[in-house]
Image 1 (cartoon, rainbow, N blue to C red):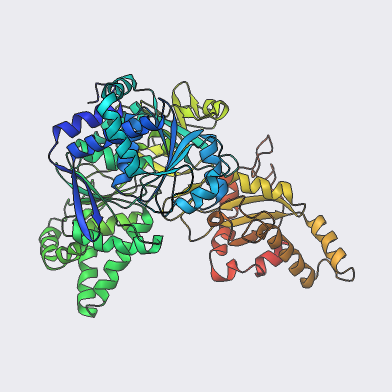
Image 2 (cartoon, rainbow, N blue to C red):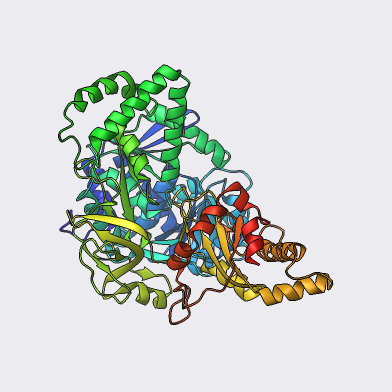
Length: 637
C-alpha cells in the first residue's frame, strides 16, 4: 500500500472487497448489537454518495458533520468522500453557537449533517449561515423544519439517482485525486480565529501506512471506539487501521446525555469484548480507579495480594524495553499472579483486551506501568492533527515507558532550537517533521500555513528530544506553542481570551491561562495596580490602598473582569466556558525582559513564565489557592 498514492476511495474499495463478508461496523440498535459487513459498508456509502449528488453536491463542496459516534457517522462521511466532497467533522462538545457558526461559515459548508441530539444547536446556528442549503438529519424525526431532510430520504434519492445516473457517480469517483481535501478539521483554535486543518486523501492513506510501521493489530480484531469520530486520530487509528486488518469497529451506544453515554461504556466493553481500544489519559485513569475499587471491595487480604502482584510485575517490566534481565525469579510469580488475580481483572474489561493505544495528551508513566503489570499495556503515542495525526507510537514489539514511541516510517524528523538549527540526539527543542502525512495547509489562512509548514517541514510547536540510546524513539516533553490540554486530551489555544481580557480591561496588564491535564484552567494575572488604586478611590476615597479592605476590593474587581466572559456576563459566549479560568493567581510584578519572561520583541515567553511561577500554579490547584481572597493574591497587591 505504501508504494501507491491512494485516495481514501481507493483504500476503501480495496479493503471492502478484500474482506467483503467480514463484519466492519457494530452498533447497538434497540438493545441488540447489529453487524454491517465490509461489502455493505461500501454499497451504503455509494448509495449515500449518489444521494448527496442528487442534492446537488459538487466536487470539492464542504459538508459539516456533527453527531455522536454511530454507523451513520461513518457511512455519511464515506458518502461525502465518494461524492467528491470534503467533510468538515465537528465536535459534539461545541455548545456555543459562535463556535459552530464560525466553523460552518468559514468552511463554506453547503450542507450540514446532524444527529437528532445535535439538531437544536444546529438549527439555532444555520439561521445565520446563508450558504447552508440543507440540514440532513441522521434520525427519522417527524418535526422536520424548512430546508431539513432525513438521511433515509437522501438514501432513497441515492437509489433513484443510481437507477439512471450510475455512470455519473463512477465518473465523480474517478475524478478524485490523492491531493484533494478529505477533511477540514477545526482544532486548537480560539473562537475568534480557529484554524481549519486541510487533510487530503493521501494524508490519510499515507498515515495509515506509516502507523503500520510501528504498531499492528491482529487480523480480524474488534475495536471499541470511545473517542469522538470527528478527530483524525479516530479516523487513522480506528476506522482505517481496522479496515486494513479486516477488523471491526464498535461504537458506544449513545445516551440522552454525555454522562449516560459514559455509563454505557462498561456495558459495551462486556458485550463487545474488544481486543483493542483507543484511549485518553482520563479514560485510563478511570479504568484504574474502578479496578482498584473493585479489588478493595474484596477485602484487605486480596488487596494486599493484588498490590504485591502489581509491584512484582512493575519491577520485572522496568521500562518495558529492558524488562526481565537478572530478575528471572520474578517470572514464575508473575505467571502465578496472572492466573490467580490479573486474569479476573481483565475479565472486567471484556477478557480479550490486548492493549490500549493512548493519545491526546502525555500519559503518566505510572499509569503505563500499572496497565502493563495487569496484562493490558497502554502504548503511548504522539501526534497532532496537522500530521494526520500519528508521528510516533509505542507497541508490543518495541516500547519505552516515558517515551512517546518509535517514529513512523517513512517520515523525516529533526529537533530544532529557536533559531531553526538542528540539535543532536538527547537535546531538547522543537519537533519538526516532513512526510506525506503533513497537512495541505490551513483553510483560507495562507499566513499561518506559511509559518507552520516551511519547505515541507511541519513545525509542530511541541518540544522534545530524540533518544540518544535508540534514535528510533521520540520523547515529547512539553509545548512550545500555547496550548491548554484537558485531562481528556482536548486542546485549546488560549490567546484569544488572553488578548481579549488584557485589551478590554484597564485593570489587567497581562494574563496567561494554564491547563496541563489539570482539573480546571487557572489564570496568571498581572494587575495594573495604578488603575486598581484609582478604582478603590472611586468606591471609597477614605480607604488606604495598602489596607486589606482595599486589596479585597481590587481582587473582586479583577474577578469581575474575568467573570464578564462567563455565563451571564457582558462578554458571555465569546469563548468556550469549559476553558475559562476557575482560579486566579494574581502576580506581584510585571513580566520583564530582565527576568527572561519576555523576549527582545516584548513577547511573553509562556514556558518561562510557567516555570518562574511554578509554585503559584501549584498553589492555585489547592483548595486554599483556588479561593480568590487567598493570602498570596492579597500579598501580590
